[in-house]
Length: 116
Image 1 (cartoon, helix red, strand yellow):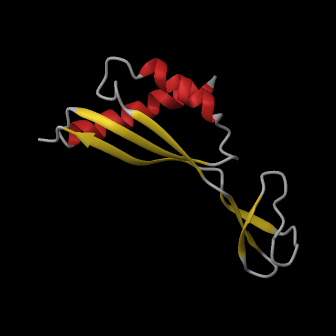
Image 2 (cartoon, helix red, strand yellow):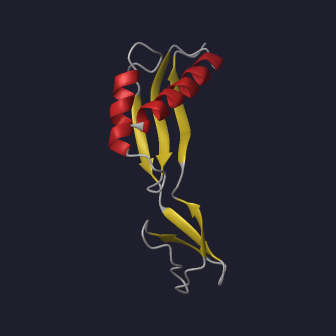
């Protein structure tokens, strides 16, 4: 389960942010996650619940915001949403597309409390 190691890295980043801002507590962590990221959201939440204990994010809420799969077409130049198993251009139907979104796992926001 690589979600556990991802969560450890996430919490290290969050802890560093809290320390930088001299915060007592992390209230909420918002993560953008794409369906092609290779991360299972339920496993990530479970891993977070396991390893957050005793740290600055002990009571933090983990919010996972699903991101859409997006492609840009090499033929018509248009960007469009796609599905994970069908990366065709929605404008012209071409299969000559490049993935521009949906594979991300991004720490988007950390909400802090007790900032000095």
